Image 1 (spheres, rainbow, N blue to C red):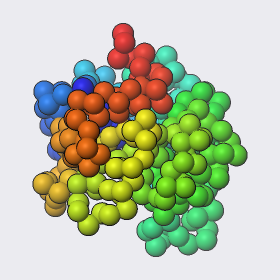
Image 2 (image 1 turned 180 degrees about the vertical axis):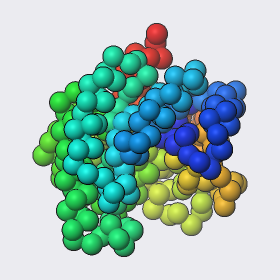
Image 3 (image 1 turned 45 degrees about the vertical axis):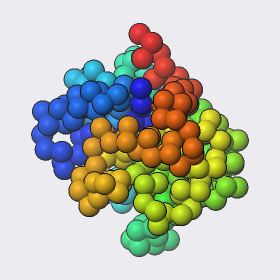
Image 4 (image 1 turned 90 degrees about the horizontal axis):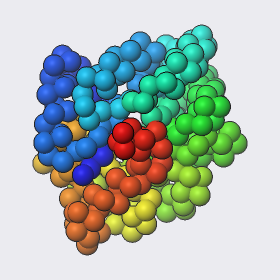
Length: 269
């Protein structure tokens, strides 16, 4: 069994909700036992919740993505805290996310917007800490900065989504109780650093993800990624490491359940 630890199943690229549910079912047929759907903005909190309840192999996280921070207001954080408090009674709610910092997109790199991103990240890390929840972190061109705030605030672990840092940064995230997310990028032969990380990092530190509809693997690119591809991505990871796919499936599933205890409880129910 595989777990897709990061999939935007509600994305408009997939069509309507019926299409998203069909993709979740397709993934289940291909051995994907669970898909974690992170929110990106307060407006889609109810959407990811509803989708997770309609797909038998889905769960969800709540958070405000850094790309949505420019249009967010401080009241959204109060709304999020209340939504998380309510969601704690929902077994399908498993994490805070997607949150983080994006210092790749030029507009988000302007000083005022960097400061706003940091404010929203820190406040969401505090929500995670206060409720004992792991975080799903967007860390594009911001590995050390996200790590600094994680260390200072101390959430209950998490996942560094689409990890593409150094081995030293990887170890720092591992020391902070994080797992490292790998997806379609590792299937491209030109992605030398990601492939080295995927091959050489401890298997106990790795989870697999699609980030669908984005980060399509090489055999799908430039098409739309889907959660069903996580099994093939996992097989590519196994090949890079010289391991068998069943071994990698078991290990990455265990890792995902370890870092998201509410997901473990959900799947054990």
